[in-house]
Image (cartoon, rainbow, N blue to C red; front, side, top):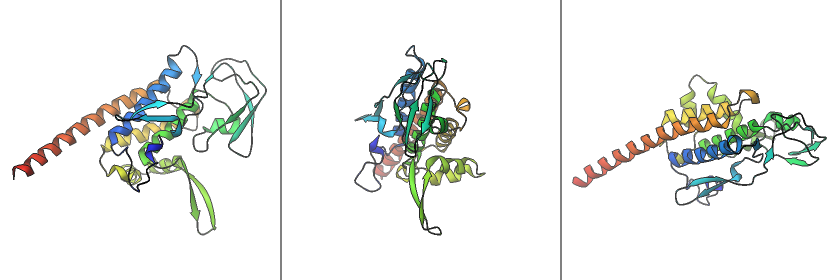
Length: 252
């Protein structure tokens, strides 16, 4: 999904419409839903991030790539290194929601790793849900999941995540006002506010620190299907209004 930020022209992206971004979110959600629930096995993508999403022109439909797929069948014990790598040790065969360890190095990407994975190396389908929540924030804001912020008082750079930005917004009384100032300005305020609010709250659910409190991808895909319909109806009304205005001016 490098097309979101890969333009050499400042202020431009091919994903300039709200509907195109919701379509991409829905495509990815349905792909993860299939992987998690309809393959007959308990699979996890494991490397979900924006660079794992391929957007195909001309309709800008999304496909998932870069699978590091694991079948969940045991629990792993790991130790975390000082970098973004997590190195696995030992093995388990308890069955259920965790994948069997087999002495291999697990690499995570900053900004996408769920807290339980970063801390203990535990992988479940809910780690994919967390990473998908980050992807939703990228589509909303157009920003990288982690960026450096310069603190002039301390003369140092600090890492600031999109998750922190969303948390500060949804906790505010004036949530909608803050949200509108946070959404990608390249959308030029052309989006249904209620749809954007629903996406942000769905992202917040996916990013819950407690994995058991996160929704599964069936629920996420279902909610995004509803948001897509809302967005499509809004887009059709907007296009109809533009056509009426254009014909009125041409008649003059």
